[in-house]
Image (cartoon, rainbow, N blue to C red):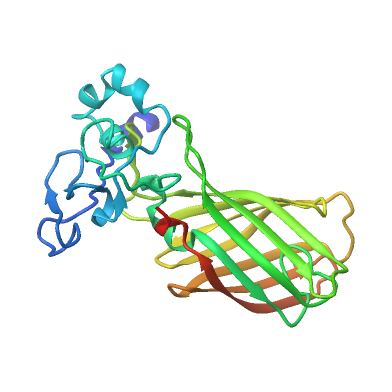
Length: 287
């Protein structure tokens, strides 16, 4: 009886995500036009451009676009969801290339974290860093790049970090990836009892030459990522191993990134620091 009552009050909805608003001026940039659609408003862009605010070059996201077009997915899926038009815009004829393309295209679902994509560098005055400190002050290169997307996988961005002590005595190398999950996301599935609003989520998984494996999860805001350590593993854990951590990555301006960190080790010692990076490469402007 109770299950029946629960079913009676359940609400269901299929997510519709609008990438522009026809009532807002320049919602699609200076030359684009916002087109109302039942599956979500989209920009009609000038030749050579596509996507949010018509700011991305016209190109396919997925390597499977040619096969999907041969299966007629550009057409039969159009009334259901805009996935193929968004991610295979050139092949599906939704935009026309002018010959300028990124080496790898940015998937629309990753637009919320586009601000952090690039190469960032810093030099510190102490050895503090996450997940383990270095022996002393160091130089660090944080490289966040677009990943190749072959098929239906949730697209990530790749992360590589090289931190080298200034005296050359210590070096940490880390590799991993970051994924995002927007709260408003087109999945093609009906969702039950989903609230109208909620946070966009992000996760970072990294492995290090120190043997450490970490998974951080958190919330994505405009120009800011709030992370909390969710999983850690290290073959040589000791009192200095990280027990708990919180980090905030925020964009100070278009060329400066700030990390604020709180780390508590197994002995209960708390370390806090602020680290500022400068952007040395913007991969979304390299055509």
